[in-house]
Amino acid sequence: MSENSKPSRRQFISDTSRFVAGVGLSGILSTPFTSTAKPSVSANDKVLVGLIGCRSMGFGDLENALRIPGVECVGLCDVDATILDKRAEDVKALQGKAPKKFPDFRKLLELRDLDAVIIGTPDHWHCLPFVYACQAGKDVYVEKPLANSIAECEVMVRAARRYNRVVQVGQQQRSGDHWKKALDFIKSGNIGKLRKINVWGNFNYGIGQKKVPDSAVPEGVDFDMWLGPAPQRSFNAARFHGSWRMFWDYGGGLLTDWGVHLLDMALWATDTTTLPISVSAAGGNWAFPDYDHETFDTMSVIYQMKDHVITWEHTAGTENGPYGRRYGIAYVGDFATLVIDRSGWEVFPESADGAYKVPAIPPQPGRDYHREHMQNFIECIRSRKDPDCTIENGRLVALYAHMGNIALRSGTQLKWNEANGNFGDNKAANGYIRPDYRKPWTFPTV
Image 1 (cartoon, helix red, strand yellow):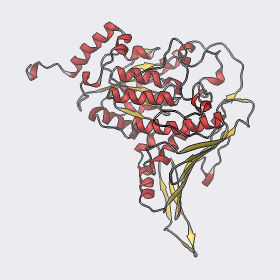
Image 2 (image 1 turned 180 degrees about the vertical axis):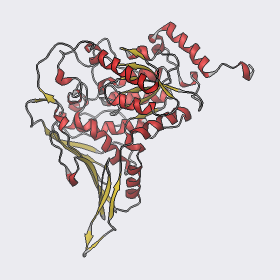
Image 3 (image 1 turned 90 degrees about the vertical axis):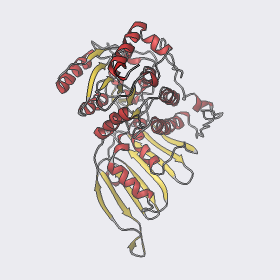
Image 4 (image 1 turned 30 degrees about the vertical axis):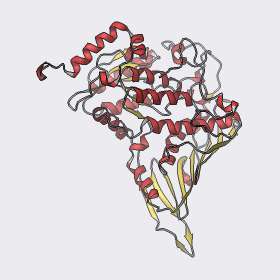
């Protein structure tokens, strides 16, 4: 075949899409496309994206993508028709062209020319769309935590690597300059031997919403689809928009929300790629009885590492914290303690014999890095390089967070067996590794 007679990337995908449309989504999943069946996105091609889960963080991620030249949104998916219609209008205002709308993410994945999807659903809906997207040859930006269970995280890693997809997990500190500078400062030995990393996050929203009785499903909401693989139950507004993450079927509370962001930075300080030696936890639900939540409002977790300790603390319903910060990380070394959050970092030197052990460092400014994180994802779609927060990074810190919750829920100290993928003979803890999917949904296999 001559160079001039070779099909263009768009023509190739167009032909492929007609085949996909003919066999339906079940055909995609039973005989998935691999990355070799889809040409890479060139520097001159538009990157065409879709969004699954349009209400909050997902749409913020999409807005950041649409600020990047050469990115276009071709489809939106949400189970709430009101939100779906509103976001379609928002996208049209941003790019001058309306996206297609879908109540079912599987139909979105059949869109012609779709390069990547953003998954901004509740946590219990991360795994299935992610695996299906990888099988369909789409790259994925998935919000944190990677998934709502350990087993789901594991199958998502396998899917990403088997189908050779570019995956960015929404832990945007990995793309942040002030985080990198602070961690380089620590890694260079400037605070001495790192002995303890204290992580905390105190937020009012962690207690959920006030208790209300079950009620009718709001008009335009496909609640059965919203539940998806989670157990069947009646609709309750306190378990829905804005507070679903405070219920175990859908999320893991503050530890899998803010904890994932901050514990990721605790692990990055020592370039940790393994799970802790042991995990212990204490706490409970002791406050705000008029507010509806299952996840813990009061919690302390200890991660035993080889040569240091990592701790997590939260008291939901309060917003005071160490060093005057409602959330943050304190890296405690022999010479100094470095404290950081999204607003910046500072160093508190230790003193001896009337003098500081290391020079004092004035507060260094910081900010959020959502835009840079999305920019990195789009660049990696083109280059096929690993992005700033790989799926392995996302899996590791999600497991740290899930293990903290499992330790308290099971009332046991956890020791992970990496070879067997469980907690050894700890039956109570092992029961939390994999969720039971509600029919007709089935746990994905890769």
